[in-house]
Amino acid sequence: MSWLLTAAIPNPAPVAPPGLGEAVNTLLGWLKWGGLVAGVAGLLVCAIMMMIGRRNRSAVAADGAAGIPWVLGGLTIIAFSAAIVGAVV
Image 1 (cartoon, one colour):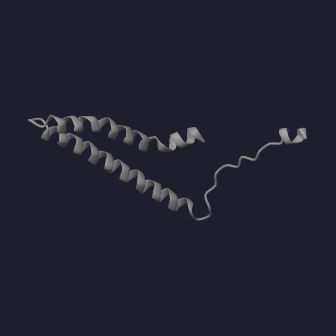
Image 2 (image 1 turned 45 degrees about the vertical axis):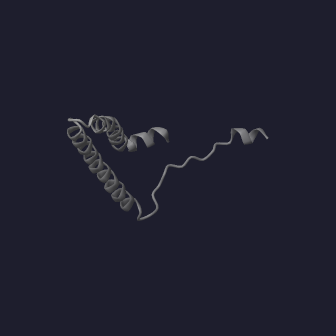
Image 3 (image 1 turned 180 degrees about the vertical axis):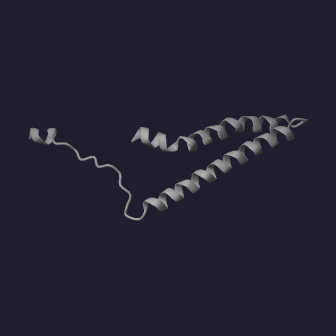
């Protein structure tokens, strides 16, 4: 029974299915690009909200300013997504 405790559990490296690796890399590249474009658009929307809310609409300006950390957080996760997954795995 002690041999069950000492047996090594196999841990193979991840391998893409044949012919699928390049397609997945392309898809991930498109998603990353789309996320970065959405991040730039998000920052622009926050800036516009702050400009519009400058006069007599302070709640709109506050909402725009409050959105900036969320956009930056999303961009950070997009930029470091591969490193985050690599560190967890």
